[in-house]
Every structure is written in structure tokens, then in C-alpha cells.
Image 1: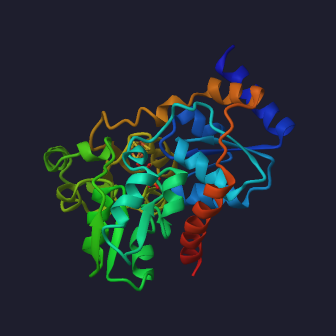
Image 2: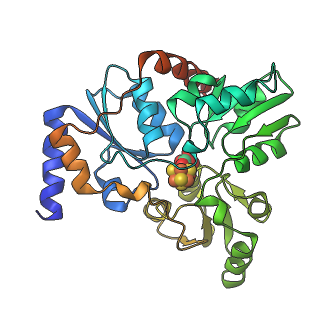
Length: 304
Ligand code: 13P
Ligand code: SF4
């Protein structure tokens, strides 16, 4: 079947199944193009909660589909490839979190949305890369446990006066960016601004002009008049940035910064998922209810 035939089948199935397709900013271009909504983790979870559809086809990684399933228990959530996981989300499980937090009695746990539902169920409040600082500020406590990303934790710690106690997790894509990459990029493009994701190491963040979630990068691209930007995050974002702004040159800070998990979703798999109604992502009600509390607390902070 040709690509346009697959796209036509997907469009047909969207109506037939009353389905909506949500895609993360790191998805391959052709998947972003058939999506009804493309965004960052926060935008996707908010969109999942508000869409009026029976089926949500989630083009992203497993924890994102799980978040949608938690927020919309009445909808069917499909992930076109069950192997699309997030290695950082798997760096802590509920047992480890319970054991760790018992060593810091009374400290609240802020949990990055890049975690499994069972970890969210053990946390006090969730955050994403776009609202982590706001979430931490919203808590009355001076000492906060933060899981699982040590780099995001370090970024948040430097924006607040609170003591952030990090779990030692990291994103294998963002942790590979080094100060030397920024310096090399700047040598090649001395006029360029450097935009990086807060999952990058502190040494990279120190050299950046702006630190943003993928959603904020998209908004910044829409507004910027700067001629060149070096982009320090997964390269899938470049597709969207270039659509938003055809005047600015967007260069990857590292051409091989690829999240292989995000790239597991293809047009054909989206079509197969919709055709065969697979793979359903479901969260057991007990876990779902507790995890939902942590996510909704974050959304409430976001709406203040
Ligand atoms: P965003 O929330 O910025 O889209 O980040 C999600 C992610 O997985 C980054 O690696
Ligand atoms: Fe997880 Fe990193 Fe991939 Fe984001 S880019 S989904 S944090 S492995």
C-alpha cells in the first residue's frame, strides 16, 4: 500500500471509530501531519482530557498514553507500538519510590510526567518540563523529593530557593548533549541563539540562551525574529519548528539526538492500530485514581 493510501485509510477510520490522533513533537513528520493535535507532554495531557472522541490514538511513548488513559477512563486509548517506552520513566518503580521517600519523612514527592502510572500513584503532584518550576513553587515545603530526572531537578533547584532532592535518573537522549557540542555549534553559527530542553545537563543549560519544553520551543519559533537557532533537544522537533517559522534557520545541536522510542510509531502502525483497535493502554482503577490525583493537582496549578 502506498503512503497516500495508508493516509486515506487512517482518515476514513478516524470517522468510523470516532477517533482523535494526538502526537508528540518528537514524532516523525508524516505522523505529525495526520495528527489532530501535536504538542508537548503538558499540552497532550490537557488535550486528551478535553477531546470529545471515543478513541484516542496516542503517537508518543507509553507513559504519555497512560496519562491519557488515566485522564479519560471512559475513552479507549491506543498506542500503535507497545514497545515505544521511555527509558527514563523506567528508571524508578513504585517500590523504589516508596522505599526512598520513607528515608525523607514529611517531604513531598514531585514526579515528572515521564514516569509510569504506578509511580505517579505514589507521588504528591506531577509536573512536566514546562511547569516544573511553577509546581515546586506552589508547594509550601522547603525540601522536595523530585523523580526521576536529575537534570530537570537541577534546573528547578537553580530557579528556586528550595532544596530539591533528586532521584538519579536521566534521559539518554538529552544527557548526551555536552558543553563541547554547544561550543562547537556556536563556532559554526556564531550569531545563533541556543535553545535547550531542561532535561539537558547543567553544563549545557549554562551555555544556552533559552531553556524550554518542546511546546515552548514551538511557541518561541512562532515569535522569534532571530535568524539562526541551535536546537538542543530531540531532532523530531525541527519538523515543527520549520513549519512554524520559514525565515529562521533551525539547526540541531546534535544531529544524532534521536529518541528511538518516539520513532517506533509509523503511519502504517497508526493505521493498523486503528483498524485492529490495538494496543489498548489501560491502567488498573486503584492506580489510575491515585495517579489522576497527582496529575489533576498539576493541571489545577497550571490553570491558576
Ligand atoms: P516535553 O514535555 O517538553 O514535550 O518533553 C517530553 C520529553 O519526553 C522530553 O524528552
Ligand atoms: Fe524519554 Fe528521553 Fe525519549 Fe523523552 S526523549 S521519551 S525523556 S527517552
